[in-house]
Picture (tube, rainbow, N blue to C red):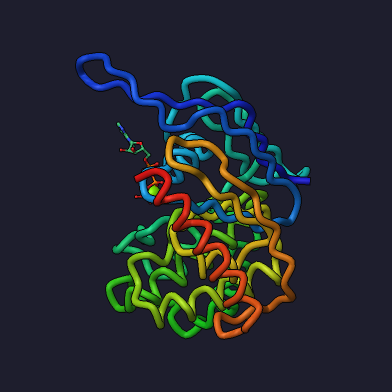
Length: 259
Ligand SMILES: Nc1ncnc2c1ncn2[C@@H]1O[C@H](COP(=O)(O)OP(=O)(O)OP(=O)(O)O)[C@@H](O)[C@H]1O
Ligand SMILES: [Mg+2]
């Protein structure tokens, strides 16, 4: 079973004069199995820093992060600096970062290192995001929302043990991001992975997650909320709206306390 284990994680940034700012302050968190976990919290609470540490883009000051794969099939394994991972990890970024000189299909092949069966996997996930007809197009021939859907298909096509996403819909308009959430939930229901999803959008978190981790200013875990609602979920579903309003109210209290 794939997992992300974060133990007593601390991150300090130092400015030029040597002053220390602690932005992650003793986070313990386990995300395991086919679970979709969102990390939410006020701006500056350390969401991106936490995800960057988990992905290995950012170093940490103390504590441990361990990524475990699901046993895999002997394909490409990723090992980050520090060798704490035997998991295959997929990413979806804010900006889809497609290679402009490659077609959609070639972009999906590239991240899979053209492993055997890559074309079938690429077609399967393109189909799930509703963009089979765009396989031979170049990124510049797609809208922003379509490019992000390709970004999601690309991440799933790697068949990662763990999927890390940082605000993948934040650059898109409200209608497009709602459609993309539905695509993401559908593709995840079909191909469940261990997901850590960073967002500042509570609606997004409630619609997509099994669990929501709320970070407090200063980089601590404020609370963890289990979301026990049937899937697929819709933003218009009253139960989604009720939970969302409840979390938003707690969120506002948290921000007011920090102000
Ligand atoms: N490279 C850096 N050097 C110094 N401080 C940094 C650096 N990167 C982030 N920080 C600080 O760390 C804190 C957490 O930043 P982070 O980007 O993780 O927050 P966030 O929760 O993702 O916020 P947002 O919702 O605005 O994206 C902030 O106070 C930020 O100013
Ligand atoms: Mg951020």
